[in-house]
Length: 168
Image (tube, rainbow, N blue to C red; front, side, top):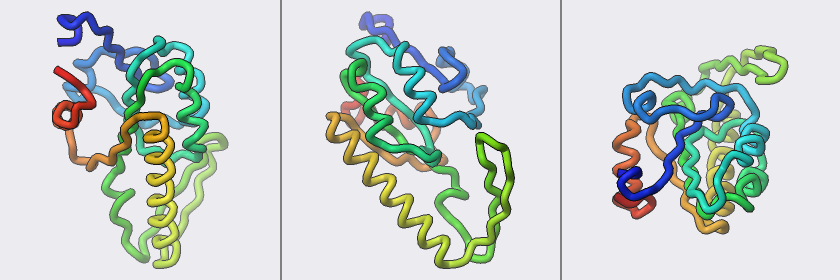
């Protein structure tokens, strides 16, 4: 459809470059990047054509400043859509469970036991992160959404069409 409308569509995996849509639609891609989201977006922003519509799918859980992420595209993209997709284990955390945390730069691993106060703090910070992202994206005239982890790529695209973010 994009080719028929003379629209150039490029799918990129941060840190891996351009990919073909079939790889995502067929479930052939893995998304386990350890790069800094903020730094990688800054690098990728140079390859964005002026006037583009950027659709960024991420869990947005790496440390970053939402204003800086938006600023990466300020002079390039006409509009942005940020979609947060969280894994089930990022949404439902049981008290008494433990998690292994790995520093993406040093690769140091720490085991952390989760009590009710640490879980509550996590949910508060997650809600604040989502509010900050939403505010910055809306300020830029874009769209911010949170999708369930179970949504497949095709269903997500259909949802964006229904909401007039994408147009067929």
